[in-house]
Image 1 (cartoon, helix red, strand yellow):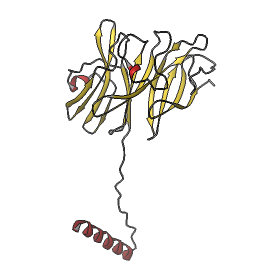
Image 2 (tube, one colour):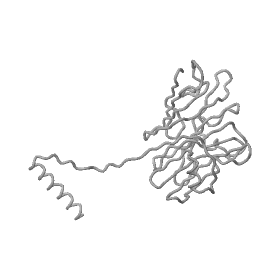
Image 3 (spheres, one colour):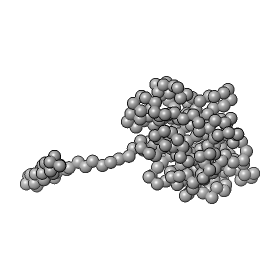
Image 4 (tube, rainbow, N blue to C red):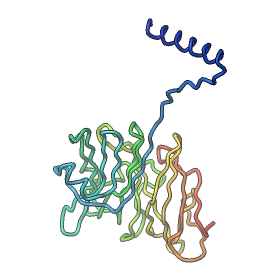
Length: 248
């Protein structure tokens, strides 16, 4: 308390002195700021047993805030199958690594991140179809799209809200394109994310055809891919708006 009083008295004295000398006194203010970072890159392979030096050297998608680093990618679990991986290091020490998000024969990877250094962490993953076993469907039950949909082979996106403390998934949604002629799923790749404290804006390349907020196919001119923008609620249950270039 004494130090605060002395500081206040010093500021008052400086203000009076500045006024007497005709000087404008600028007092710096400390403003709390949140650093929001995103990273999108070609997915790279690593395991939960790899060192941070080894993972970092692969130049895959990662976010570094202070001494905290999160990396996302995949592990080649068989000759024909990849499973997503995400790992966090603090001060060079592994805090957690998750290998249980998707453990089916779906060829899944992780390739995008958004993190504010605090509680807001989103990861972006791929899916090429629904397979038997545990995958992102268990996290996306209430999501805008709760599954891959019909068909298979087309690579689509999954966005997941993740607990930065332990890597657990809070909730997720699939993000796909939908063919107007037969309703089957078509490819979509997320290219960036942005967060305004309330909603998550998703930028993506969508093949024929992007989905409207009501999940139906847009009517588009020209050829794929289409530049797609969708604004999600923070819990990924709803799309507030969806637009695409050359589509309506």
